[in-house]
Length: 135
View 1: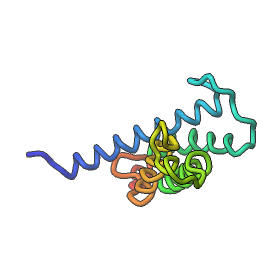
View 2: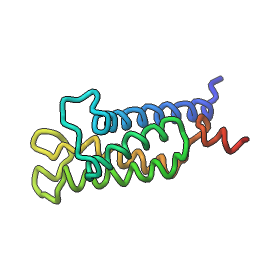
View 3: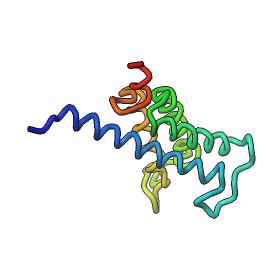
């Protein structure tokens, strides 16, 4: 018989790890200048701070360390990214987060709500937070 609770915990861990690693890759692009052809943002700029949050926050979320505060900060960063850089309070087709006629902010919006959910849910059973709590 399948232990649904165990599978739920493992699937959540995989989701948290993959999302955190993917998020941190955006920081790798911005801060380390790797995996991209774009120029690195100016140090101390808003985009640079966003990259630091992506790099460090994504790594913390992936390993499950300080998960709630890291996910909360990541969620807020993606809310700002969506509103300021994608939506820009435009109406019409630009209201929708799809690419093409929309604003292209689908990934920022998904990250925002995924990290908000991780903030509420916590690190889960497969995490450094859980290991430290047991010790």
